[in-house]
Amino acid sequence: MVFAYAALGLVILLLAGDALVKGAVNLSLRVGIPALIVSLTIVAFGTSAPELLISIKAAIEGVPGIALGNVVGSNTANVLLVLGLPALITVMHTSECDTRKSYLQMLGATVLFIALAFRGVFDLMAAVILLTVLAAFLWLAMRDALAHRRNGEIDDDLEEPEGADPDMPWWKIALFLALGLVGLPLGADLLVDSAREIALMYGVPDTVIGLTLVAIGTSLPELATTVMAAIRRQADVAIGNVIGSNLFNLLAIIGVAAVIKPMPVDPAFLRFDLWVMLGASLILLPFVFWGRDLTRVWGMLLSALYALYVLVVLNV
Image (cartoon, rainbow, N blue to C red; front, side, top):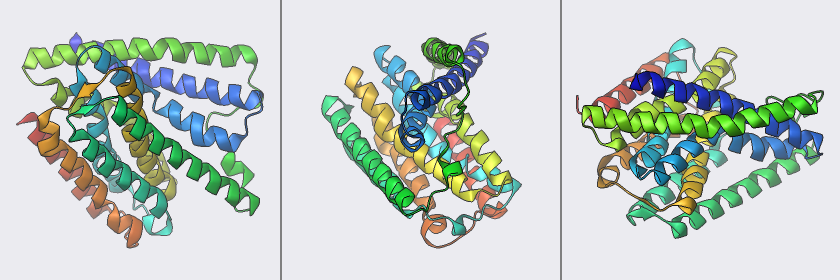
């Protein structure tokens, strides 16, 4: 039953996160916030809400391994699994995309996160640093987007946030917000408590559960988005989705969770998992800078590397 509760918690989290995004997007548009700003801020934060609630719940419950494992494991899975599996379906022409700036920001955030981890704890000081860097990146993204729009380089259709419905009635907006705000903590409670029970049942550290079960579960939305983008030949959406998700995981999720409660860093992260996360990020270099396409061969390699990583973490 504990696995069923974990699955139920994950499903509630994902559905509640989607409801919260729809409600927040349409509320923001109805009160006059520009669609471009909604896309860059509210949608980005809303899609990270499940991971955020998990990390906050885990930190409060005294299982920081699940909180940090969720972020580190998700970032590794986002590159190796979320890009690897869709590449098995169809070639992604990443050579046609220009994601160099956002990729360098993600790489910088990864290095900063690792440096802060070696302090031994993510405390208020670390949180302030992470959230300040996040605010700077958001400001740069908004400035660039507004500049492109002034130059006529952004199509109005592309600015419309996902889930936007100009005719959505107020009662429906309120319903989506209520479902999201109630469902997210409920799903987080179920998933974190179940994950802790599973760790106790099998005698494995909570960090392992965070790096595998929780991380893979919270990466499912990114996987679904990337698969659809690959099928539609939208490589820029696929790789941009991964880069944006990883950036928010490192800066926003751990930043907010560390404000609420300091999280000690398990030495296992410092010895192995953080470096795997960095290595996975560096694997994107050929696709971002050297014009390589994500072929099926690369898809097999990335997927195999992820499978190997999970086996090593589980000590199988």
